[in-house]
Amino acid sequence: MARRQSFSSAMSQYQRERERAYAAQQRAIAKAHRDAERARAAQARATAAEQREMKRLYAESRAAEVGAMNDELEVRVGALAALLADTLDVDDHLDFESLKERPELPERQTSSLDTPLVAPNRASLMPSPPSGLRSMLGMGKAKYAEARAAAEERHAAAMEAHLQQENARLQELDRVKAAHAKWIEDLKQWAAGQHAEVDRFREAFEQGDPDAVVGYFELVLQRSAYPKGFPQRFKLAYVPESRQLVVEYELPTADVVPGAKVYRYVKASDSIADTSRPATQVRSIYAGVVAQVALRTLHEVFEADRGRNIDVVVFNGVIHTADPGSGKPIKPCLVTVRTTRDTFGELDLARVEPLACLHHLSAGVSKSPAELVPVRPVLEFDMVDPRFVTESDALTLLDDRPNLMELHFTEFEVLIQNLFTKMGLDAKQTRPSRDGGVDCVAYDPRPIFGGKVVIQAKRYKNTVGVSAVRDLFGTLQNEGASKGILVTTSGYGQASFEFASNKPIELIDGANLLYLLKQHADIDAKIEPPEDWSDPGTDLGE
Image (cartoon, one colour):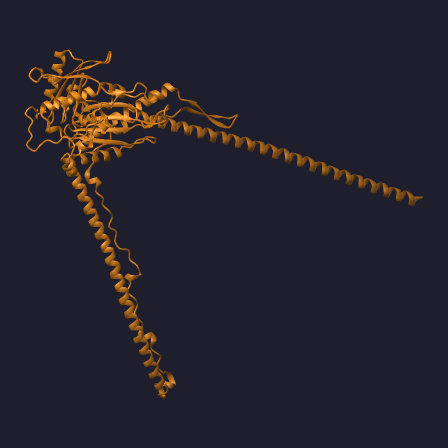
């Protein structure tokens, strides 16, 4: 009985221990689950925080990207507004010395050839003499003598080989030195030739050679630093008789004005959108660009001309594009101006408003440059006949074109009358004794714009003086004409252009005349005064 109670008590104790162990195990498992859940929650919170931070940083990066794009927009628009101002502090004069190339004359690089070869060491080849007991007994002397003789032969052979190698080294070193010296001499001769070419260029420019004058101002305009998007392509012609430079300058299109006004980041679509710049603002900025390029080019030419080869500059700003209707290439002129050195020199370019300044210079400016509305150039670039400008052409000796300077003055007047008739005017030649300073009277049949036109022709070799232009203006007023035209085989000076400015007077020089004869009468002519030609009526004091 006692044993059964003891066994039962032991079983109860064992059962309780098992229950306690199981309960502890369950608590441990529950705790592990809770700990795992807390870890997962912490990880989720950390991941969410990391994602929020990444989103924040990404949004900041996109905002910074947009900020940089807006800053770039501001810089681009600012550069367009400062086209004229940016050149005023630049010295546009081209120093001919700066054109001279001065190549570096490097010293010859040393190499192993500059190090003499080491001669064979005779002592290292010699055998060791007998020593110790063998030396005292005189043993080995014969073998030593044989070994020494063999060593001497090896040394002699080694010395001969060394001398051959040393001579070869010295010969190669002399060849390398000579090649380097020739290279240096060739560089010096090339530099001397290039310097002489620049000096000839300078001399020709100072003497007013047309090719040199054009070449000089090409370099001046090429060095002008414009923002990205400006073609910087141009053509130049020089008329020495009137000291007139004609510039046909390719303008950028309206695309040079940024089409976006401001950029912004759209978070919902993760994209960058822009607000378009108003069309009126694009047109206004572009009109300013066109005006500034014209004034900037005039400024650069006059400032660079310290040799005073230029009295008058004609600037035509054009666009090379395609006609939207026909698809054919067109070249509308958006701004045209002719001004003299003195007139332009009176301007304070740091304070002018570009468009107003051009109007002050009586320039023709497109009413809407962005829409490519053209104006009529004051002088077509093609009217500057290169055969007239470049008189040094050797082929003129073989030229069979009629020479206007060989015509009698009455024949010349008839030619002018016929020319204007071909151009659509009703032209009549006046009698020489009754012309009253008029060589030809013409009538322009167009309504409103037409009317009476008085024409004077001057077959001169030298520059037509301003007095002739004044006389034409007086005749125009006396005749009640709406326009006066002065035609000459030579050219006009600065004072003539200044007097004709803002008056109904057209000045046609020799280059223009040759062009008009070819365009309207299909006459290829030339202008070459004889050696003994004199101009009794030329005002040389202009």
